[in-house]
Length: 130
Image (cartoon, rainbow, N blue to C red; front, side, top):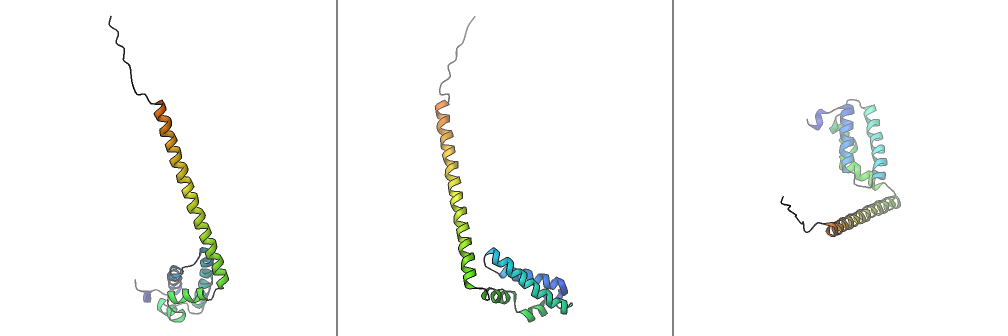
């Protein structure tokens, strides 16, 4: 289905989805931007209920252009804070995974060591003849 055959709310939904996919920023900021973008696009659709995807794009620009304009309108301090928080969370997750892997390997090493100490190495067979 071409973008020009989509009209009204379906076109707005597709345009918002495409714009959302072009946003590359931390999740919290992205969520706020998506709400603002959707609000603008659906306000436009309220006034132009039969607008096609291409008409929406002509009004707002391409999804990439719209995403970039919203990102550029943000406060740089807000972006830096969100990026720093996201980086801290990623580092915490990586450190936690490393600790979990070390604990897992230590547990396996202990199990192998304990198993060697209790492993049967020789079986004595006694045969009784009557």
